[in-house]
Amino acid sequence: VITALEGGGEWEQVLVLLAELRLYQVEPDIVTLSAAVSACGSRQCWEAATRLLSDANCRGLRMDVVTANAGITACGQDWQLALSWMFDARKSSLQPDVISYDAAISACERSGRWQPALQLVREMPSLDMKADLISHNSALSACEKGGQWAHALRLLSRARRASLQPSLVSLNSALRACEGDSYTAGQWESALSLLRELRISRQRPDVLACAAAAGACCSSARWLRAPALLQEAADQGVGALFGYLLSHSL
Image (cartoon, rainbow, N blue to C red; front, side, top):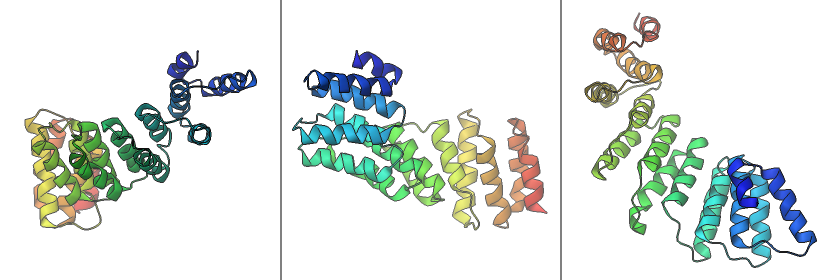
């Protein structure tokens, strides 16, 4: 029953059922507990998930990687807590998998914590794990939020070396990371290069990504590049870029 409720995210009913089991002196096993934690995680009720996991530890239940992943995912709004659960899993001799890392990197991304997100991506190969596109996209988004355009570009290169094809999400995040208050030559050139890559691959950048590239040109005294960028964006139907360019190039 608890497993069925997990799929619907009915975390309150799951907690009620667990309480009823204990009234009848029936202790949930690790499978039941994992389902309960997942149900809490699906509704971002990380406090309830944490209580369940802490209670399991007190009762001597040994976590498996599925339970650990459920806990890390449930703590997605608190990056420090998510990393803490992953490290606790290691202490209990569990080997985190790609799902563990994806969940932890995603937690870092939500808080804009680009340093731990990048560190997690970098350490995966040392554990014989290949970071997937989900890992890279979450880390790219964290770099975007932190304005870390150089790290974002290096992360794109890492993905390509791993034979991963950057998606529209990947390239848009890298483009938006190029936006900032000050620009270097490498920054605006990289922004334009990413736009060209999107055009060649017949993918459409979003308005914010185009605005970031336009801002890089305008703010770096490369505003003469803006007309060509404007035409490229207009050809793709990104009309909102007109106002941005006009307000930043005059």
